[in-house]
Amino acid sequence: MSMYKIADIISDIRPKFPTFEKNAKNYEYSGNEPAQIKISIREDYIRKRAEKNTHLTLGNLESIFLADSFNKKILKYNAIFLHSSAILYKGKAYLFSADSGVGKSTHTKLWIKKFGAENVQIINDDKPIIRFIDNDCYVYGSPFDGGSGINKNIRAKLGGIIFLERAEENSIEVLDKNSIFSRIYKNTIKFSLDDEYAGYMLNTADKLIKENYFYLLKCNMNIESAEICEKFLLTGDSYGKAEKNT
Image (cartoon, rainbow, N blue to C red; front, side):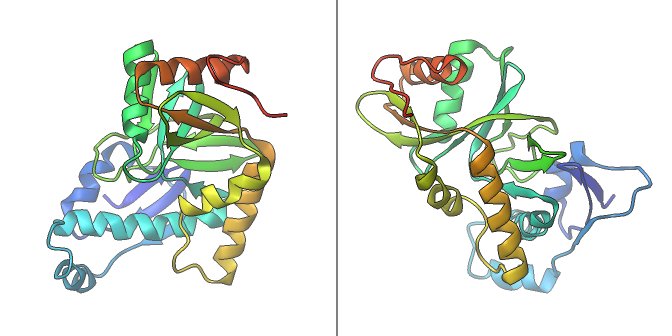
């Protein structure tokens, strides 16, 4: 099986090792539409790179290369991935993005602990995809989950993107639009982009910034941080030390 439907994009992906096939089983496509994206990584290239990445299996290394190629090619379809942990809550998707080690996965697990696994689903714990379709902005799961094994083949309208920073006290605010691009750029694909694909990336990022809400959550990773964030996202009310910028 080499046909997959990821972010509503028909993809012909031909892995040499079983790791990707296992992760992507829920994305298999058996329809008649032609592939929009075709990806195959040479086995000799994977094995050569494995010599300097001995901590990774051949299958895991191939999955990284497939993710890089896929996340570049989807830029052409008004789509972009964001390094983040995405949850589905009350019918909308919320993405939590942070530098490595800050605790995006830890924070989304606090949502499950506070609001219940029946109310909070993790869509993808590493590389969810954001895509514009008919002027609506959707978040999709993808089989590229950073090795966590946490991904679901679902889509939901984007409710907001939250950038996390560690702090002793919890607070949340709306980010100024002028400060957002650098945060997105740091957490999406930017390597090996020629002028054409760099243009797609910039256009999609610009549309994302103009049409959606972005927040900065300073948090100490106790359960109160999830309470503060949830209330602010759903009501816009100040809570604790949270203040909404105008």
